[in-house]
View 1: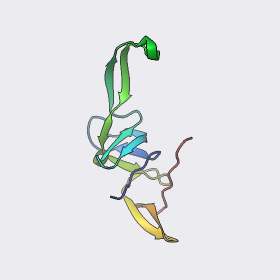
View 2 (view 1 turned 45 degrees about the horizontal axis):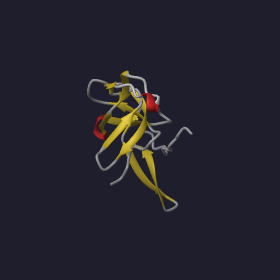
View 3 (view 1 turned 180 degrees about the vertical axis):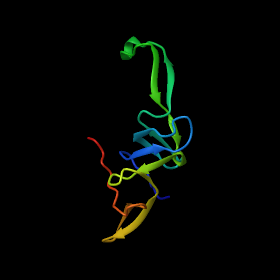
Length: 110
């Protein structure tokens, strides 16, 4: 299966309650077709305090997984949501923007 969206990509939600929001992909689970996007699909989790692990109790807000089909990749050059195409360059498969034709490079933050 070709991975069109990778960790570190900026994506825009195209459907659901968070439609129009943009965020960076934190996790990708290609077998389950799910991703976790920072600041999108926030759920509340009730946590018990655990002094042994220095965990405070309370309500924690954290991003939950969502289906890959609910997001579109944002092209770094044109800044618009786009489909992803593939092009072979020097024997290596590259991802390209379908709107402007520019190569898409993952910009992971260290």
